[in-house]
Image (tube, rainbow, N blue to C red; front, side, top):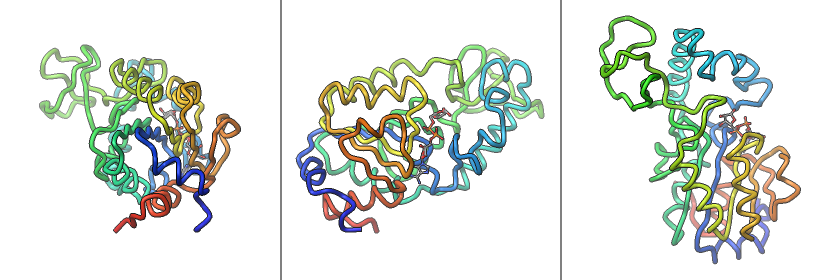
Length: 250
Ligand code: APR
């Protein structure tokens, strides 16, 4: 494994002042949370996301959508952060400036110790009112599915971004600003297919940051990356920590 991190990349990372990391579903794959595009385990294979992860689907069948998210919440609750998540939480402490941007809604970065991940697509463990969009932390369990907002009586929904919905404005702005200011940008475990997240690595390239992709498969961005670590993030990120900063995960 000693040659996984090229010398030039080690030098760049050691001298970095601001590292930005964008993570996608691949980062949680080794925690047993299926990615969206892996045929054999990805959620695409089991469900038509248009049936479940859109406001139209919720209006059409709120009970089905709510129950799918209850199932996914259980899946995520039973999952554990993997060494890739822990390595990112360690890396955060080593840099003058470190920005973690995630497309994942599973909250595993926080459970691994990352302090302030930018959650572009929301967080599956949070709930909000479908009518007024405000977060709801507790509600009366009347047996009705989905439950209702204690403020306005609207239906409750998971606080995640559905297909066709816009991303949280502040989160996206913060992410774009970080991508434009950083000197190193790591794209980890994302197929780089879904906008606007997929344009963040491009923002970094245009701002002359050094770009690194960590993904066992090629993506549309691979050919433009300065460095490509074609390994699972659960292996590559701890190796980065060890070979660049001499830190072994406990
Ligand atoms: N380590 C690193 N990358 C991995 C691993 C792993 N162990 N396993 C799979 N991958 C890669 C796959 O090769 C793929 O490129 O992770 C990527 C997962 O891609 P997607 O399933 O498309 O997930 P993501 O890129 O996060 O999708 C973006 O699209 O489906 C919507 O809102 C959803 O947030 C999601 C967004």
